[in-house]
Image 1 (spheres, helix red, strand yellow):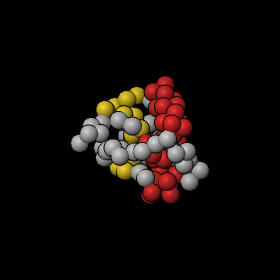
Image 2: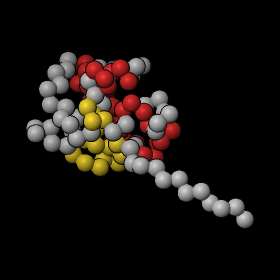
Image 3: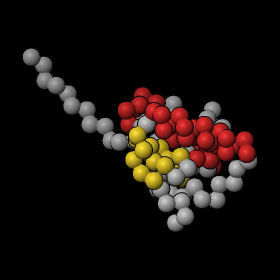
Image 4: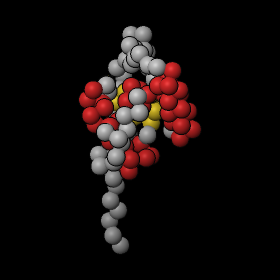
Length: 105
């Protein structure tokens, strides 16, 4: 009988607007080697609103903040706000909301 290997995976969160989502179950996308790894444990609000998904690492270097940091100051066009609303809706459907961030602080 083989010995079971227990893999311990840290939770992975992504913040959008004022919501922190647990994306841990989708480790293939948000884990270290995943295509969305640059969004892990970050506030992805601006990158998602601006549609900067093709180069997420660069987008986050330009806009991203660690989870818990405010996205206050995001100045978006109507199109960007619609895009952000769409992303927020998709995340609400797929992932559990773990926290509501204080964007005023």
